[in-house]
Image 1 (cartoon, rainbow, N blue to C red):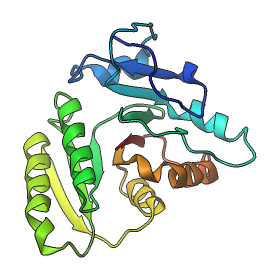
Image 2 (cartoon, one colour):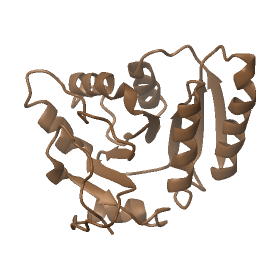
Image 3 (cartoon, rainbow, N blue to C red):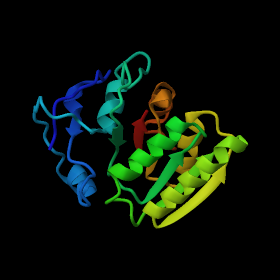
Image 4 (cartoon, helix red, strand yellow):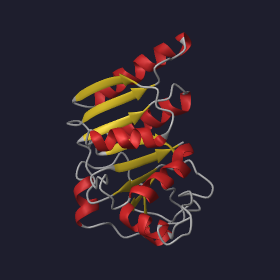
Length: 209
């Protein structure tokens, strides 16, 4: 089931689908790529997730003089952007040590619990985490491990979303889970590399706050 859009996207909202039935069904990925669902307006139902085809958004971006943020005012509803296909085969979690980052990962695990049981997952965490954050970091690792088939944990000093995108492309990750606070920089990266030699059309992006 879908509902009306409750956020202000910079790109045309005609390419966005809103979802209310969560957690998502196990066949969600197949239905999205084989026969994308039509939107309907249900004014009394609140959307829980937005999805959009990444090529349509990038074609829109390339019609602009300069890349823009995907949302003019980021809302609390997560956005999932997918390319040629939507696959949960290899998840890449961007954990920055903040409670907000932990919340994004936990909510993703809830939304897609039915879709990620056989997934491989990688968590990238800052090389240095304050002692006060170590317990939360271990809880995130444990929770991701409880929801997926295989979990890896890596510490890197990545400070740009482009670093995560490059890692995802190199290691053929299929979903990058990160914060909407990086959406402006992500738009620039995608704007620059779209249809280029490094482009990987199996990579989707889950953005939340």
